[in-house]
Amino acid sequence: MLSWKRALRPLTAALLAVAIGLAPAATAHAAAPSSGWNNWSCKPSSAHPRPVVLVHGTFGNSVDNWLALAPYLVKRGYCVFSLDYGQLPGVPFFHGLGPIAKSADQLDAYVDRVLAATGAGEVDLVGHSQGGMMPRHYLKFLGGADKVNALIGLAPDNHGTTLHGLTGLLKYFPGAADLLDSATPGLADQIAGSAFLTKLNEGGDTVPGVRYTVIATKYDEVVTPWRSAFLDGPNVKNVTLQDLCAIDLSEHVAIGLFDRIAYHEVANALDPAKAKPTTCASVFE
Image (cartoon, rainbow, N blue to C red; front, top):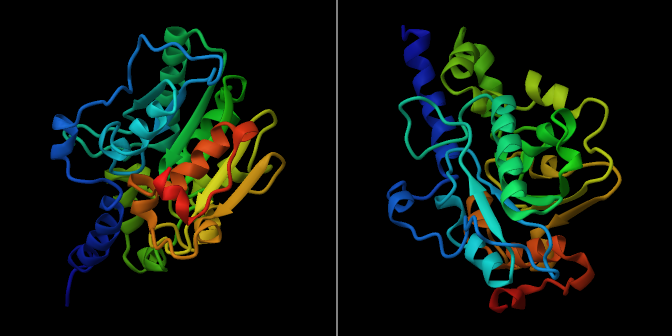
């Protein structure tokens, strides 16, 4: 008979294989130019008075996750910054694996640094996957609502994920949940029903004073069910990518890494007063 540890290996491999899709090859991290973002001398313009802080997803980092979106926003006149968070000792490039509450502490410190450097009063946050959900802890429990105008999430796991039911198998392997929690607490925190998510969503999804936009895709294979990305509450706009362009087949990774239709909707959310309709043709804008 197989030991439970040996039997657990396929499940663990499946969980990691799905999550690792959140980042492109690590080699890009060292070689990629910043294309004008993370420019600490950048001063916001009157047209775009708030700097934008990009928050990567699980297994992502401050460069790889944003090789397309950061230049897209810089070209449109924004001061753009991105941070690394959730690092584990001895694990280079692939971040977002540490306890999410501690990752929110890192975001707190980074936003303060951006505000001090730019002289701005508030920032806008744009996050992919965990990066669209984790900032809600910062807003709700760390005073971030006083420093943030808007949170825009690309396929965020706001209510956790079941990974198409795979997470439900953990209970059949004694000690598996504890192993996941100790080795990669950032993954364990994102499982639907986790203690972290239960606390995060108690008393409502949102906090006053912040605008929320969620952009989700019907083809999300990581955040399941895909509608669990959506938020309830005032000042919330939930958007389904395929309602903007029915032929957009982007799934969880693509919506963050290179989908210009999603990016167009991000630009609208950053500057709603100048929003233009997002359609399939937005890929050319």
